[in-house]
Image (cartoon, rainbow, N blue to C red; front, side, top):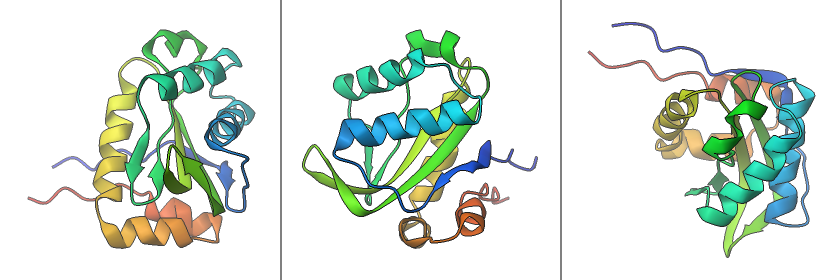
Length: 150
């Protein structure tokens, strides 16, 4: 079986000691991290907030996966992820989020990214380790694709 493709995570888009005033601030920080690695243009940030107003990107286990709307695909230059850890937590509509994995993807690339992330985060030990990671290398290792079982 083919090796799963690595997730497009630039180490510069990993922030392990972030703090946010609230959900929208955390989302905008994710968007800015994606902008800083050249993955998105400024309009994508508004699209990330719009997506959150439509449907919560909270996934459980203290993790949210903010991403833009389909209409914002033109603001995406290339597929990318960012990981922001909020040790103090962020109130996410009544849930406590400590890790945000922001996504930017062209075409239907977000489906592959969401699927890969869901497989990783469904493993409670991996999700916990991601919430507790304090080194960029650890985050990169934790987000490596899970091998498909034969």
